[in-house]
Length: 355
Image (tube, rainbow, N blue to C red):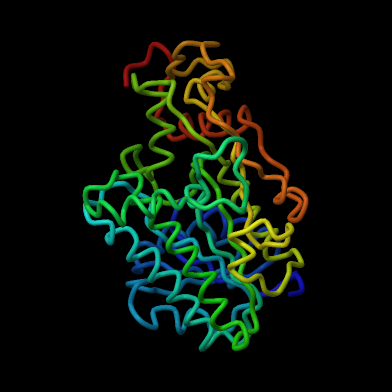
């Protein structure tokens, strides 16, 4: 499939943490953007925030992304789709409460694009690094799948670990997308690319007034700097602006037009439209240590207490750099921008000033 250098991009779930940065990035690159939101109220902030772009930004209401035909009208007349709308929370007893919206929303937008997306050339799906995670030694790459979580949920159902339920939902949604393309490849004029970022961190530009309204990943970051939470835990991370830029570059980069699911499951060369974004291993103490000197009241933890052996392994994001041309924001710049956002919002007070 050729690259897409201009036109209109549909961004699903446009009021979300990642999606709002995607909207910003596409608009700044000269694209027009159509965003979807669940109701008109959720679109008010976006209309104000992106008002300077005039008619290059528009919103459509999709009340339920799992409903049949939910995206039928939204996909009409767009050149590319960035499907970011998917739950990221761990508050689910029934695994289907997570996998249902993830799978149905993903397959639903692909089905709408098959039927009504005659102008669509590429669909970028925001998956997750948890769909890649395996217990193997060494860095994880795009040929890895988290089959362990899927098996755990199949075996234990509601009794499975909460995080396994979330991982299972991401694996099923992504595999469902690749299987959909396998089935309908001769019927569509578009291809699919999947992005697999880990925990996404950084400043917010979506509608948030208090720290309590932060999404799961950004709330974890805020808690690390403002509460007595443990500092040794962690994982892998990605900067939210890098993730937004990855969506743009994936749309604008020439990629293979069709990659069968078998090529995503096995090491059959490096020709696969799946990209790990970010993926550096970290502990929360690493984040605290990366903070610049400041007069703000944030926690310092135990500076310098983390060694390499304590830090989670990195993921291999080589393909995103070589194919997409990704360049990554440092942990220091990410922390600095995030703390500046807290300070601007008044969420962290100067020393000597009561909260």
